[in-house]
Image 1: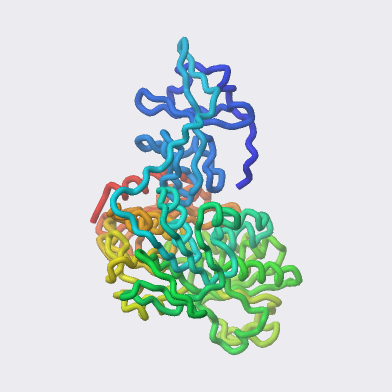
Image 2 (image 1 turned 180 degrees about the vertical axis):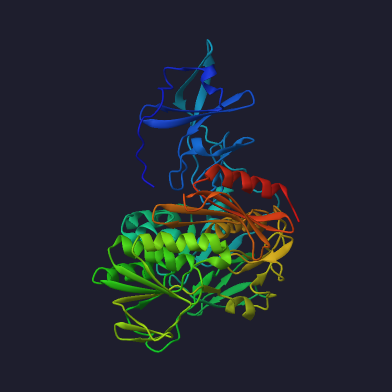
Length: 506
């Protein structure tokens, strides 16, 4: 995520032959800034060479029309404006003026005419209230201001910290390889500068859809013309004896991650209950801190339900190579001081216990407001709930997915960001359907797993390549149709799978 760039490739200020772009891409530099040349039809574009999210190399990405997609986490940028069109990237790229002279391409000046996103047309609401300080809520607020919405934005968050890069909490930040400065999505000054009224430590207890007011635990009534419900999910907590002890943790917020880091400082042994994505990312992070880690889970294989048996076996072996001990097809039944007692009769010593046994959507407020529920908050294709003027996005939203032909709810951070962006546009009257293909990534040591699509069930997994060699693509199929694709170190194939899915509807 660092901003520093080396000067790779030719100096574009001195010019390069047009023929050098026969492959459509060329990495060069202007001063110390790496710049990527891209040829689309007869036009040549010059943009920042690295994604504004995690600094992914765009030369390894996918050019689609007049956009480029990041190979790492599938952000998408407009080549004409540099705008971040699709999360997880939120900041635009710089782009440069391109000149052709005597069969050469010259790039010398950064363009200062960065295009502003077009304001939403039509009659605008005066007041928008966002309930929730996570990915969906932040992305909505950011998009509202990006689209030059001039009305008031009040963001009500029960969290103690401003919106954060949640994936980092279980990955690099927890492992100690990323500073806390990388965790906030924006600095504290951003909210004042953009006139976003962010109110932390604020619990909303009810919504009055008749008077159009959100009521807080403190008795404040905040009026709205449009409201976004983005309350997210909360971790499922252990209910076994001893689970209320101070060395037992869950991970969802920045406070949770801070507390776990503090506990890890004096810990030698840890038990992770649950072999979920969060649980195993925590295991990897704790191993990076040289803590002995035991994983306890009732599953036969870790993550088999999501990724299948072959990938589950690989993930187990990968963690075992890094020193993790597994206690599978077993459960924790009690935590007695520094001992975790298992159903099998075994005991694990633990200075630190982490529960990674899933999350559940926060639906109490939606239920109180009388919104239709269906394993989440039921929304239409525009993310509007059963009550006009109230939208829902993120972990709580269950929407009609055009790719699977089913109503689905997905607890992925990137999906929450993208839904927040679309909900913002629709609150401004744009009537934009949410049609993004779900995407998530998971990091285990040096191995990234990218997953595109959504497959709750499948009847066949087609494996291309070698999972154990960390070079593979897995296609999850039902009735011969690919519902989802997982990959390791095949970033371009993952992007191409995303594009294919975008073109297909059930």
